[in-house]
Length: 247
Image 1 (cartoon, rainbow, N blue to C red):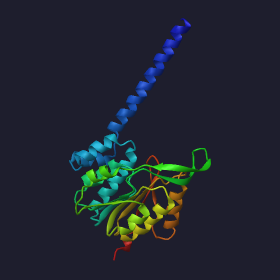
Image 2 (image 1 turned 180 degrees about the vertical axis):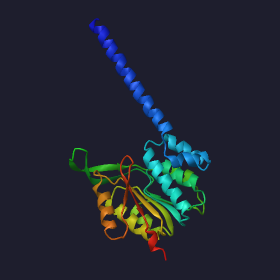
Image 3 (image 1 turned 60 degrees about the vertical axis):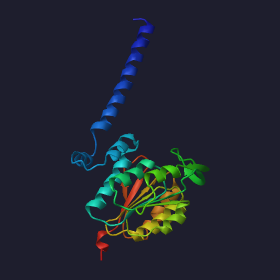
Image 4 (image 1 turned 45 degrees about the vertical axis):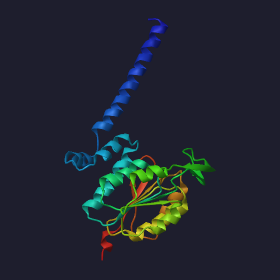
């Protein structure tokens, strides 16, 4: 066999391996889904737009975690609004609105390009201070998903200032900020408004964003609950209000 023939065989095998890997991953995402998601879909209890969003959203674990938290507060009949402190993903906003159309929703964030200067640690352990462009959902998109009405409250601006305007109770809070002050202000505002069984999920709890971790750890030191790590791409933690505090 010539060298060129051997090279061709190697190339064909590499292409075949890549193709098989891709299709295995593709079908794994299609076939292996959480049992509760499949059960609710079989019973036609998932909104069509929520199913469509699940197919598009790259971090499936995050999407499912938020969906299941919503379903849990619904099953437990935990009263209150949904609060998004930090608006980085339109799909999550659409998930909340479509799946629970009767809930009030508070959406708080800048809704425009902003930069913040943070201490950041990369995967190699190098710590630097750098300017970070914060992901955002544009104002017109926010208002398309949450049109003006009694069930939709959209507050444009800083999260730390906006969360103080939320009136309770709050059944589910989603905190998606990277600055210490925004995360701490969100937890301090939302936690007291949680009824027993209410949930707060804080995103980006990882080694890269020290402000998020510091705020969550410091806040939890002063409350009776602990946190549950969630297996999504960038790290989230859930705090569930102690049901024994009821009454």
